[in-house]
Image 1 (cartoon, chains in turn green, brown):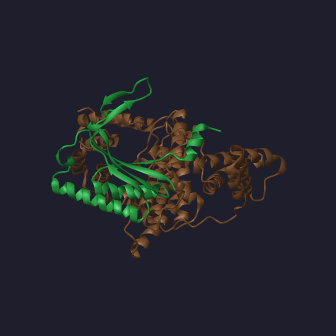
Image 2 (cartoon, helix red, strand yellow; image 1 turned 90 degrees about the vertical axis):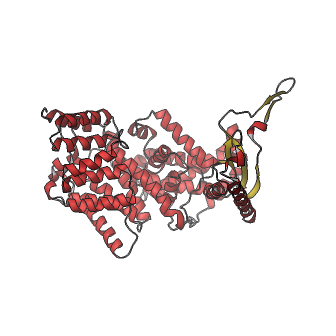
Image 3 (tube, chains in turn brown, green; image 1 turned 60 degrees about the vertical axis):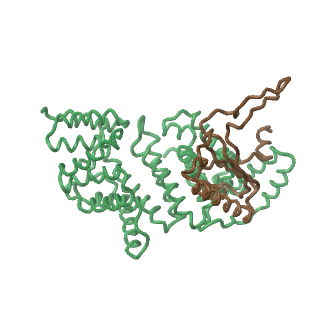
Length: 128
Length: 415
């Protein structure tokens, strides 16, 4: 079954209450997201899900040279960074999109749906 | 007339069978590239064989069989191992298509795949015209005024996304079908309008685009006969297309509805369009769902085409229909069209006040300035009318329309 990553992006530095209007709203979003996760597990779509600390806590490592080079901060410089994600198995994109819409409503954020590479797509990349 | 019969048969088969062959292969092999290339090979083989062997009694069946064999050959060539097994299985697979939704037709599934909301609008139109209409990449690129390489890339990317993201070859479930059908209709209407009022350039392929949109909409109607909006869009396109011959003058100038020679309107298309509108009216009267956008637009066009002369138009009926359309879609463009009808019913003063309320929202839209110019002209405000014509000409992309607007502007008497 195809596997998809559902990603939620947020600002580099989190405002108070993680960008939610107040504490109650934040707790409600957490509760709704928790309920959505349980639904994913119950219905057999769930692979993994979690939230990430702010992008400012990231360290980028380049180990390609003689000694690893460490840089403070994320690899890509953008306004919005990956804040959390789900990994789900779904029969096709339509199912993944329907679930993403529910996840988006639960966590109060836009959700990017992206398929994982498969053995087949890897073979296509290598060519005949 | 001088064409050899096999050429005609091949052209007809391409017109009638291309979409069916591609759609059948797409379902069976689950791969658009395989489907498209095998279909193209089958037509190439037909071009070689038919002049020698004669046209087969069932050209569609012959093409499907040949294309299926080509697809299996190709899959075998591409992989000596696992796919070989799969291909051997497919060769034996004579099972009828699995039911996947309210209607079972390979072309309908392919139409929903090509018009999937996860694809960009440009990709949806290009894929629909390529895979279902059988238009070449060059023809589509020409029609939409984009370089061939750009269009080829757009199609390749869309097909790669369909494959990698597993966009299903399926008609959406009954609950989602209406919503998704709206996207399919939007693509068809876009293709039709690009053919009917081209955004620029030459004409030849664009007329084909209107025909293609009508053909695909007819197909959609045979597949989903009870959806009012499908019927509505077909009626709308037929009633619009019926006026095609009267729309551009010999000197290449756009002729407005009011000034058109109604004698050259295509009566056959009008009759068909009126019949479809009547069909919808009785369905609604019998308690069916309220008419949507395309049904209301079709009804408006039915009122126009029912009038023997422009002055006989039932404007109160037109305005009433626009009122319902505004209730459904209060966008400034719909309100602008309503204002045009309102000018005929309540006079240019009333209409101008309404148009001026839309001026800010539609400043970059040429039709606003065309309407404004016309209302100002009728009110005798020549200088203001001239300024509006200038702005409309600046924004109009269609050459026939520009010529018309320049003449109207130059007819204004000084103020």
